[in-house]
Length: 273
Image (cartoon, rainbow, N blue to C red; front, side, top):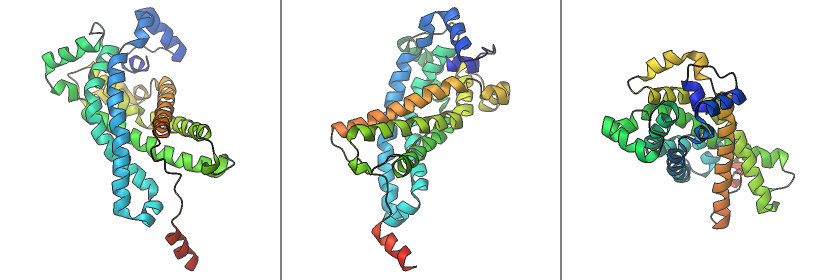
């Protein structure tokens, strides 16, 4: 629904009235349009994003060294997440292209099975990747905010909110902190990436247009249309992603590093000063 709000020229007046209009025009089924490419695309992207993030975080941490990795940890989170998202979006873009057209183009195909072959037939492989650059513009800042904000929020929650050290918390309590930090990060993610997301939607709804023309057509107000439902969607989705990711680590007994602490060598240096 929130994507249709931004692409449509008709103002819906708000979240509830917009959903009512969507149901009136296409029935309850209209609210679930594009679920298949959404599921496939974001599953592929999520696996790539989280996996590459862990990889790049380890790589950059090794390059910086223990002390600098702690001092510049926020910059490291930003660099690792940006690198991870660059590759993850290559997995997402084809499904995103199909999804947006299903949701925003009247009379177009309504399923992934019909939509993907149609794009290939009419536009070739480029049709799946025409939105890659604006997708990077949307997703890379989004993911940088998602990971850096999550890491810092977890650190602050354990330091100022949770009344005991993480090591003394039960697994359920730790997962509750993960979910809370994930939701907070998701709200900031939605705000940071919303204008670029609106441009991606407009581009896929109008295959002949470009980034600049799409931005001009939307206008500043149009780029922010649909923010409220997107905050709800992204906040919940981000919280669930982090919760599931952390739950898998717990279930398979994978390493779950605690919030970063100042290395002893750095403590001694600061004490000597």
